[in-house]
Each structure stands twice: as C-alpha cells, then as structure tokens.
Length: 228
Image 1 (cartoon, helix red, strand yellow):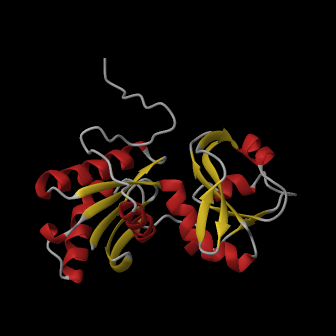
Image 2 (cartoon, rainbow, N blue to C red):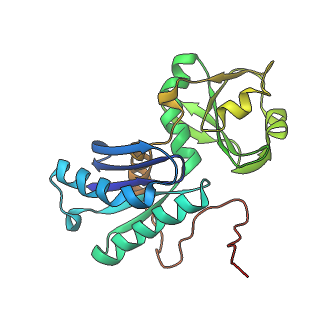
C-alpha cells in the first residue's frame, strides 16, 4: 500500500511517501507560512523518489489539527484535491497524537511513561493532550484541550512527563518544580512521516472520512475577518 502524508498544521511543512507503513521518501521545511508555495513541489519530489504515480496511491493522510488555522486549511484542501483527481481515500490524522507518537522513542530514552503534546495557541494558551506511552506507541489520556499553561500544568499527574511540541519554551518558563522533561528537538516536531505512520494504522482499521464533509479540527472557534 502506498500512502501519501501531509503535515501543515504546525511550523513544519512536510510530505512523506510510505509503503506498507514505512517511510520511503520525505521532504520538509520548518518555517511558517510557506506551505502553500512548497507543498506541491514536495509532493512531486517524494513521488519521484519513490517511483510512484498519483494513481498508485491508496490514500492521503493529512494532519487534521489542532494547529495553525491557515496551515490546516491548506493541508486539507490539498488532500481533498488529490481525492477529487484520483478517488484516493482521505485519512484525517489527529495532530497531537502524531506528535506524541514521534516523541515516544525520546520519552522512552528518558524513562518517561507519559507524554504531553502541546502546541502554541497564542497568548498564554496551548492546545494540549496527555498520552500514556506503551513502548513506542501512545494512548490518549486526555481529550484535546485548549488550556492556559497554568491550568494544564495543574492537571498533570505526578512523575516524569516528556514534553513535546512547539509550545515547549512557553511551557518550560512556568514548569519549574514539575516532572516535565524537555525532549531533544528531533523529538518535538511533528513530521509528515509521523502523520503517515499513524495514518497507515488508521487506514488499516477503516479510519477514513468523507472528504465532502471533512473539516479541520480547530478546537478554538475560527472567525474569518473581512474588510468593511
């Protein structure tokens, strides 16, 4: 099974090609506001690297949120366009779960049985979710939340908790005296490969959606500003 994976929900714009759940090609850049101009080129490059035509793809896994409102809309629009062109399945992948899955090896190395995935939601707030690590897999303990850093830290269980996501610096300023462990940078960013690995698992268990009604998981309300 050939699966394309897209990550545009965070500061990473990335595309990966997976074959039977294993990444075989990937392109990414960690820079905000470039997804619209880079993602199509990345798609072409990973397909060429993998020797795969779009018609040979079984599906596209897309990071569905929470995250950047603009990034989420770009990624989902591209996924819907691929579906319209080829009929491939669209697999929505929870961004925080993919992020926690990418952090699992780093958490294991630190001896942390819990992983806190946290993305910056502006002001003093974060999109966050707590996971229990089971080997290099994760299981959600919390639902996805939009909390102040103070409230999130108050809810944490005792013991070591590995911290991943782009809100790490914001959280660390208030996390003294807690059991939070900051992971190395390679374990704190969401990647298209991580989205693809989770997407392949979801695809295998029937986790796909009707693209006509699929929307990003904003968590916060989204308001489109218009000029008067």
